[in-house]
Image (cartoon, rainbow, N blue to C red; front, top):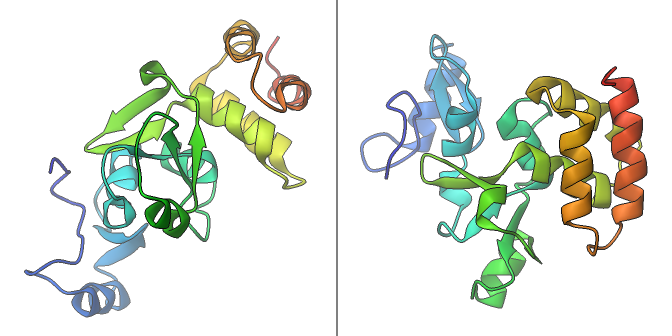
Length: 185
């Protein structure tokens, strides 16, 4: 598996209690399912790789609020949210354990960070705008738009591309409200 050397995950060489003790000593900080030395940069790659212990394989994709956290514009959710392409064959018990949604998704809507697939920022925004029920979702969407410098045209093209998905009208309203909040013309 490809991962940055500074991501520490519990394994045969170092146990989870040892890593938690190092966190108490101030040498590392908890990050996802792993730990990061305090002097290492906190990047999207580091966040994504820290989730590898809960990922089944590369068919399972980090999505929604977890993807927003990976990209750096949202807080880490209590549980990792994932999706899987409807064409992938993931056993039902595994999908239920991971709370994985089956979705229509193309390869260009995924980004590999290390060995962890994550929905692209645009796809993450679209999914959050369609499904997220939090009252502050517009703030989260605006933060994502600002963080990635997305334009009204890019977002409009993404909405047009996925016009047949459920809740696209809601997504359009929420994303254009977020564009106004992010001061994107």
